[in-house]
Length: 252
Image 1 (cartoon, rainbow, N blue to C red):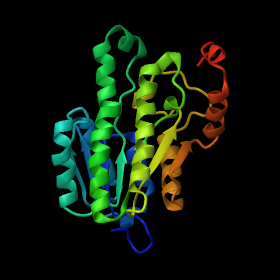
Image 2: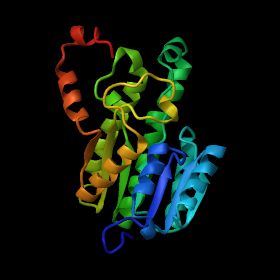
Image 3: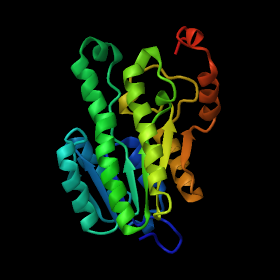
Image 4: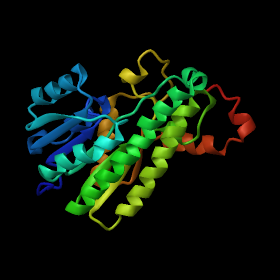
């Protein structure tokens, strides 16, 4: 259960090595955390994530195997985590950026991206929502992307998966309304992470810690949707209004 000040005491991270998710856990009041479960594919990165949190004096850090593409296993993995105790905050942070050219040349590559970014999220999201509804409290943070606000020629496969995820998360939030549980959709722009390493930075590029601060603030305010950074809300609103013939010529 949330503590007396409304801060989470237990956290589940789906995509346990995500730099944004880890920064978010570190941005929470550490002394109040009693349990943090990092769910991801077994790897040195997952082990390092657990070590990072433990070294930061966060109690009860553990890892569990989780594969976003293996939807048949999601019910068992998520169910076991909730069976061991209430979860106040779930961060759904898995996803792959992929390569647009490869996805166009090999449809199987595009399907694999969609399986993780969208199908896996639907599978995990519905199961988490059922658990949160049953316990009567908790928040699900969904890491979406501004790439899903309007698909661009340069990454429309990735953008379309995020568009689907964003729409799903909005509906899931509406479905949970009145249950005591809720959904926070986070729409980051370009964030400096392993996923974007080597790519050219764009205006309004931020670090994982910046996104984490925005997420924690939004949770405390009871927000349903937030952009990271905030000014992207206005940028994307403007881009949505650009006529398609003009939009396809933009260098974005």
